Image 1 (cartoon, rainbow, N blue to C red):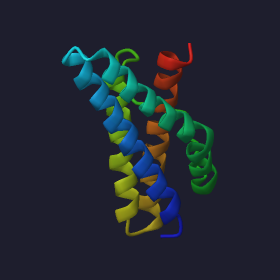
Image 2 (image 1 turned 90 degrees about the horizontal axis):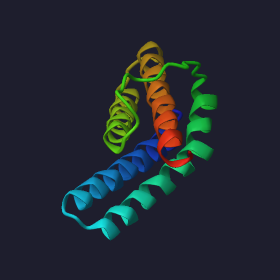
Image 3 (image 1 turned 180 degrees about the vertical axis):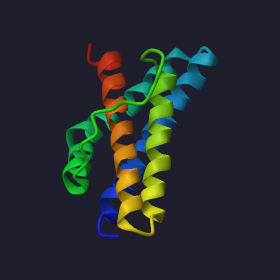
Length: 127
């Protein structure tokens, strides 16, 4: 696999962002507003980095073209968590792909997740 470093970075950063948003929601559930805000801010910083760097690099390297987004009700942290998780699952599929056709199929699914993450992130945090 020639894009191992890129896929590893994408997987690690998105999984860590996902974990931060889960921690944020758990802290909010516990009434710990300070911990909620801290974890949310850390997740936001990671996604901002992904949007400004890794997502673009993925699109260039994998030559993906999908403009589609995953279905979701309305932008919220849980939908963002779901999209980040979906991204991780499909990157895992790419890592396990045994031929170029399967890898390309998963790459387009990753691109859909990327598009969804961008859309939700912008609606929640850049408005």
